[in-house]
Image (tube, rainbow, N blue to C red; front, top):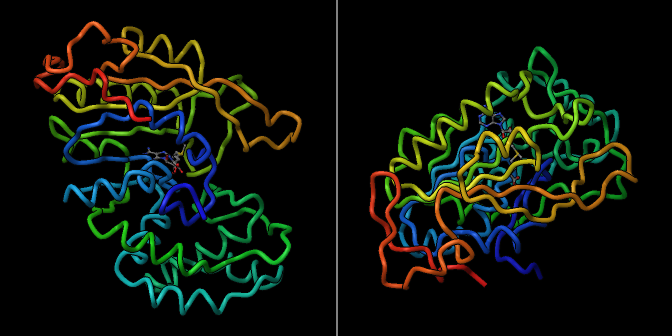
Length: 306
Ligand SMILES: C[S@@+](CC[C@H](N)C(=O)[O-])C[C@H]1O[C@@H](n2cnc3c(N)ncnc32)[C@H](O)[C@@H]1O
């Protein structure tokens, strides 16, 4: 049985499942609503959903990939129909290319969700990549009898999504609803470690330096509102410079997305916080209030999760 009650239903490049133990140490212990505008596989959301639902808080989840958000909406609203439909898929190369060639715009929402779930489970490395026309173009993956429909996992995700608002779009959408006391987790496509190491996946237009500067502005706006903002990114001078003055942590990461197997090793990543953690505010007494942005929030001191 998994250590966590619910987990991502799709494989996702840059997914955070293997880093939850390290990341969760820095989650705020108190927050109101939850926002994740680079949702992908949603590892952090699935880790937190039980407490989000227990608190009757809302989760605002989004990603720029419409197909993934449609899949999540269908899982939330029509999971049994999705299971029934997706069970008809077969693991076969010719069949795969036939499904891949379908146009999402010509399918109903359940068929679209079933298609993308199937492609995710059977394509090479579970990658999501589209060509300049927005057509999915990852090749067939070589697996030994892959599980396409995990009913238990889909039903569990369906209950996790019941209090979630799911939107497709650019990350700036987070500004629409995020308010003081909310927790915002930002996990953008990473700044490349070197000019040759950029992983070009996800969407037709890549996420470039201008987008990272735009994200920095959004981070600042959310911080000024009094949100607890946490961002993951690569350990590069560009990111360190951009977030100079913020509470920056270094954690260990294992990158799975590297075509050269020997280069899939332990590297460092950054976690950038808009709020203090136990290392940075030991001088505060637990009852003290910590002020940042426009809001006054309970000090985070001692709020580290173990
Ligand atoms: C590192 S992945 C997130 C992984 C996720 N945290 C997980 O655990 O699976 C980055 C995500 O950002 C999305 N993305 C890329 N550009 C975006 C944009 N401009 N606005 C919103 N999402 C974007 C990608 O589709 C991808 O799912």
